[in-house]
Length: 358
Image 1 (cartoon, rainbow, N blue to C red):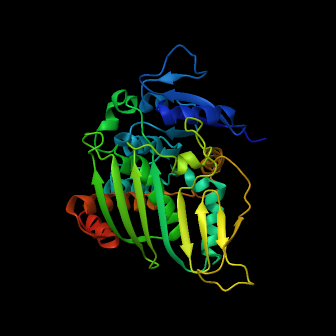
Image 2 (image 1 turned 90 degrees about the vertical axis):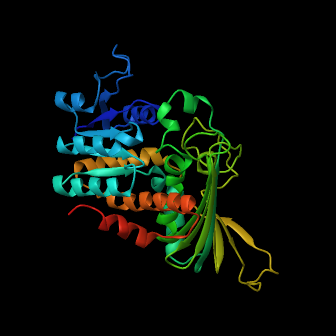
Image 3 (image 1 turned 135 degrees about the vertical axis):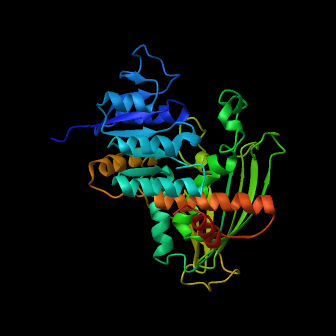
């Protein structure tokens, strides 16, 4: 019988605690260690607790590590773990910017490492079903997509965790990175991006609100609006039961995708089509059905997948190379907002790559 995978967790904050609970409840894993200078050392967590990742790695006893420390430390911590020979589940974003994420990807290749980036939404059953509907032509040719995420974060989110107020923690890199990753996964690569950002609502150094316009390589266009300072029932977190910390509103959606044959909302998978008996135009009533899908927590599915990646029996659904393209898109959006221009995403990536030392 295969022994449970011994997993250590770096960072016991909001996301780290979720991973700790998931690992503790998994039959395929055991919580082997925690590395966090603020975690209690009294044994209440049921495993050894260390000051930092190097101390935990030096002590041994872990096969894999979940990294959930502050974003500026992600890439450095990941390389430390890979050099120690352990597999890594790295919380998003994988790095602070595209250049750093490419260096991380190079380190993975150099070390022959096993790393999964924690864009957990890709593991949601509704996402897999929506992607198959799009790629199998159930919507016809995708013409456009729109999305929205807005929620008013509590003041303690910024006062209790100072790095949430610093570069690398705005709504773009903390929240919109998830949505841009899913839009890439569902609709393909983005060719051009425009953006307007604002920090007016909170008055912090980082943006709290952003509006994006996208042109995909397929020719489809899209828009996305996000704010961490405005009340709303709309967004992925509210439309799923992914995290119990967020109230669940089962009739809400995060994305609307429109095609030449049908329209689809995600994650509730409502499919709008014309019946064969009526003309397929705007004068005819639409029929609404729901694509069938088996409910499963994307966090649990991600952990199960990570166990397979760590054991070498599966390739990561979200590799560092893949995640780096999402980071490039976020970075291109920031450039578009600051320069008030349209950014060619392929040229943007190429310019950064050309500037890398050989």
